[in-house]
Image (cartoon, rainbow, N blue to C red; front, side, top):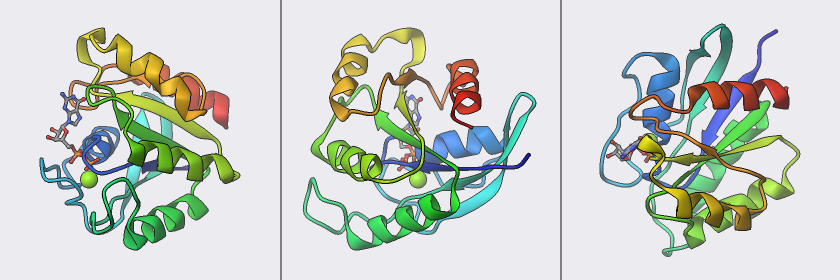
Length: 163
Ligand code: GDP
Ligand code: MG
């Protein structure tokens, strides 16, 4: 069985870092500047024996703070249309922002299963950011560190349950 995952969320939450980790190569550009991934990227990814196609998404942050730019919206929508599962990342260190709420609201209106991922959770240090995420209405978040490769076993289980 083959399936497709779209990694979505506001700029700078670690989407490209997770994409690179799933793909096992540095394909996506990771940068401290929000929104540097201009184009959607696609590759074969895996977690242990689970193999899938994965999209990295982004877009330039051109809109008002707290809103989604048209470009970000279009690109994310296109990836979602082609995906079987969306991984919505947010930054557990920064906490839930208005843009995360916009993303969540939009994803809840769609028909694809969404796995909420609290990124930047290395060392299980970010407890507040995890509880805050319940307000997004996407269920229990999975604590992950894309940079350090922590939480992938839980992500694996969540993906398998969503299929
Ligand atoms: P994107 O804009 O959502 O694609 O985010 P990037 O993958 O480009 O990452 C944005 C910033 O967050 C970079 O400085 C990354 O090194 C950092 N980052 C990504 N994942 C983690 C993580 O798990 N922990 C920490 N502390 N930083 C991370
Ligand atoms: Mg990126």
